[in-house]
Every structure is written in structure tokens, then in C-alpha cells.
Image 1 (cartoon, rainbow, N blue to C red):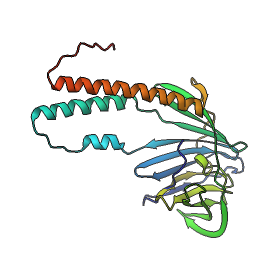
Image 2 (image 1 turned 60 degrees about the vertical axis):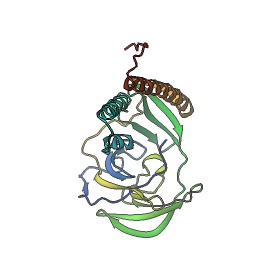
Image 3 (image 1 turned 120 degrees about the horizontal axis):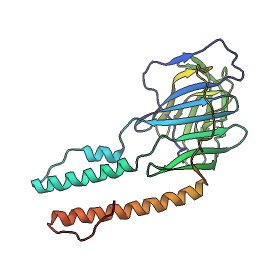
Image 4 (image 1 turned 180 degrees about the vertical axis):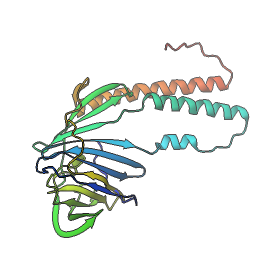
Amino acid sequence: MRVSFIFLLLYTPIWAKGYSQDRNNSMGKIIYEVKDGGISYLDMWFNSSKYSFQVRQMAASPTEKNLAAKKKYESIDDSIADYNQRELILKILKENSQPVQTWFGELTSNNVIYSAFIGGKKKYCVSDTLSLINWKITDDTATVNGIFCQKGVVVTEKTKDKIVAWFAPSIPVSVAPWNMRGLPGLLIKITNETQKISMEMLELEWPARQVVSIMPPCEGATSVTRNEFNDIVNKHNSDALKLAEFYQKELEREKKGEVSEVKIKN
């Protein structure tokens, strides 16, 4: 489970939208921009007791970037063989690409439920327990993206990462993605100063103009614990590795002009 990050400002217009309805028990929507080596966006719906969020990945994976890199070949045959190998790998990546993952949590519990997928098809509903950050609230204040904020800090116990968060006391909800929740106000910006990773509000609707249902993402899914899902993933990866090794050997045989007698069933 992804929990050891925290993010950076990209100079993009920030929009905070407010409406005239009562905010005490209102639903809100916040979009964060994440920078952790790539660019992604996190959409979170929340109220005073529960929340749900999704991450939209915007950057190509390191594997895809490596495949797109220009190479020099000693012969046309080498070029063709490399092209065939790249096409095979891209096909496997596409077949195993994951749908958007949804996370759900309630402030009355440290438990979290999230959707997870195997091979981009089989859906699981995974339950886990969060180890929440023990924030130290300071008297420091600042205006972040037009919102008055107060500062929270922590140095992680295991990795000694220094994490700085800015939250909005005027929005009295303690929700935040992953293990970052627990601040006495909505998280606006958070930075892991050690790893140079950051997440910052891009857009905020409080209250949200559109009301959605905040529910666990378990419809049509098999419910498992995180440990059970890890075992499932390990078996799937092992099977996928064996298949990739088989295809690699077949490509090498083809390059040598050998004909394989093995037939693969579709």
C-alpha cells in the first residue's frame, strides 16, 4: 500500500469554490496535484465522518519510457527482433493495466477499504489498517493557495523523513489520503522535505456542488485482507514472469531461425 510520499507546488491556477448552503455536515470535493517523480491527480470526496478518493496517473511508467528510448542496432534483424520484443512487452503491460483504484475510510476507525485489480480484470475489495501519522501542530500560519492554513509537522520514526503539512482550520474535517489524516482541518498541502515529494490542493469545492455517495468500492468484488491480496499478487506475478520468460525464449529461437513446436492456446 502506498503511504510514504508527500508532494510539490506546480504553478497552476488554484480554484476554491464556496456556496451558500450550510457547511457543518456538507460534502466537499478536493483535487490534489501530486508530484513524486511523475504527475498525477488525486480526487477526494469527503464529509465530516468519511471520505473516498481516486488517483489518476498522468505520466508514462519507467518501463514505457525505456521502451520508447532510441537505440542503435548492428543490423536490421536486431532492429526487428527488438521491435517484436517491445511490442510484446507493451501488449503485456496493456493487458495488465489497472483500472482506477478507489479508497474508502471512516474517521471512527483506522481501517481502510480499497479496490485492487489483478490483470486489470479481477476486482478485489481489500481491507487494511492504517498506521496514522502522529502530527505535531505548531503555531505557524500561512496563506496557501488563498486559504488561511496552520502548520503540522512530523519526523517519521523509521525513515526519519521530515514531513510538513498545511491544513485549513476553517474546514473542520480531519480527512486526508492514506495515512495523512488526523489534522484538525482539511489538508491543503503536504511535503516530504527529505524525499522531495509533494501534494497540493489544485481545486476545492466546499460544499461540493454535486453530491455523490461515499461508499466502500466493493460492488462485484471479492473481499480479502491485505495479506491475502499480497499472496494473490505474488502468485499472479510469478505466473506472469514464467510466461514472459517463455515468450523471451521463443523470440530468441525465432531470431536464430528455429521453429518452436509449442503451441499456445488463446
